[in-house]
Length: 141
Ligand code: FES
Ligand code: FES
Image 1: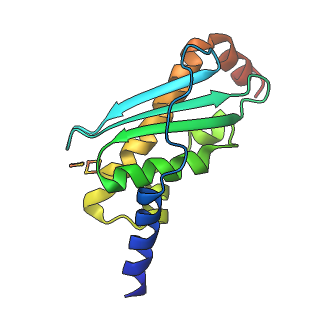
Image 2: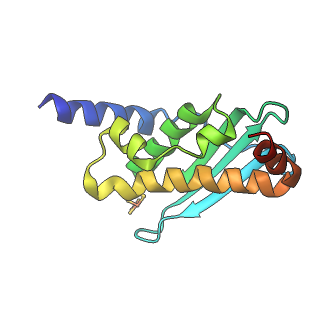
């Protein structure tokens, strides 16, 4: 079945050649860190985003995931997806979007949830470190 092959190809590609693995300097004020776990299986994902202070665009992103293949593939795909997005855009990324791209089966949906949680957590951490930024962007609406 082509659908099946497609699923395996994309997941395996990200799993065997994960993009943007690593960490950024989290003492840098422009770096936000997300650290989340999946209660169901204990898998853990750490995500770092570097944000351009003027444009709010995510200029760099790294991850480390201690987890299953679908979790690693989801985080790898997420890093490609959010690089170049504004924080506002990245905050809207849904796990279903990731699951759809990778054709994850229902039992693996929570693996993509880990990626959604991680980017939200990293964005929140960035806002916490830069409280004035959020005020500005909300006021500018
Ligand atoms: Fe074993 Fe996720 S449950 S790696
Ligand atoms: Fe738990 Fe994939 S099995 S994150």
